[in-house]
Length: 162
Image (cartoon, rainbow, N blue to C red; front, side):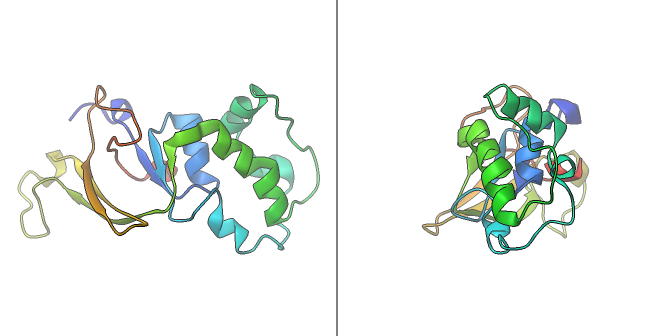
């Protein structure tokens, strides 16, 4: 299957963890259930964060954004709306089409395995089950290090946990 660091990764959710994972870990794609960046954060956009700006900005993401002319806020406690507009939307714009919106991960399994077939299970690549907003379902096996990297490529999950 290749070394874990050489395999492509798919993260689930694009608020801060997914977009940061793209910026810092070279994640191939993020699957986001919402219609746009930080859809879940937008549900509580009126709430002030408990952390100051420097604590809610990832270093790798900040480097990526600075290369595009962005200036990081240096103090204060942003609201969810300020965090979205001042950081998460610019970060989502910077990573571009590597974020797939209106898509939901419905499951993760191993190629050719179920819960009853476990011989060699750990040697099999993951399959990510994704449902698009139009209801279409896809099964995407994780490619090796030389696999596809376009919007249709398939990757592993859990980037935020690595």
